[in-house]
Length: 175
Image 1: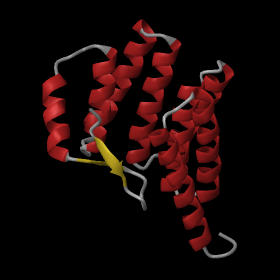
Image 2 (image 1 turned 90 degrees about the vertical axis):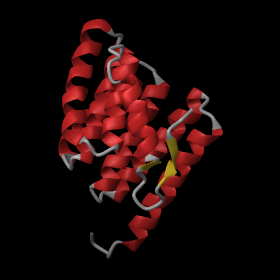
Image 3 (image 1 turned 120 degrees about the vertical axis):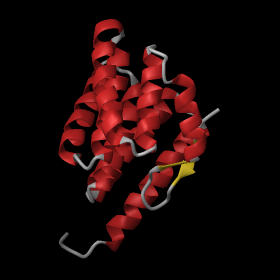
C-alpha cells in the first residue's frame, strides 16, 4: 500500500496523510535493512523532519556503499538528494541527481535513470528553472516508457510536464 495519495498540481510534492506516515515510521523505526532505511528517510522527509532525514540519508548512502549493490547506492543517493532539495539546497541536489541519472543511463538501468530524472525535474521545478524541469520530466517519461512503467507512473510524469509548461508560460518574457 502506498502512502502517497497523489501529488500537488502546483508544487508537485507528494500528498500524504501525516498520521499514516508517522504510524508507519514508528512501525519500522528500529529496522536496519536497506529498504527500511530508505523508507524511513522518505517518511522523515515528507513529515518535514529534515535534519533527521538528512542524517539518516547520509547513513543510508554509507550502508548502501558497504553492503548494497550499485543500484542500491544510486537509489540511496537519489533519496539523499531529495532531502537536500526539500532543505532548499537546490544546487547540491541538482549535481547529485544529474550524476545519478547519468550513471544509471550509462548502466542502462532505465527505471533508476527515470527515477533520478523525475527528481532532477522536481528539483529544477522547485528552484524555478521550468525549462530544465520540463527537459528532465520528458527524459523521465521516455525512460519510464522504455522500462515498461505502469500507467500511474506515466501519468505522474505527464502531469509534471504540464505543470512545468504552465509555469513556463506564466513567467515574464526574458526570465
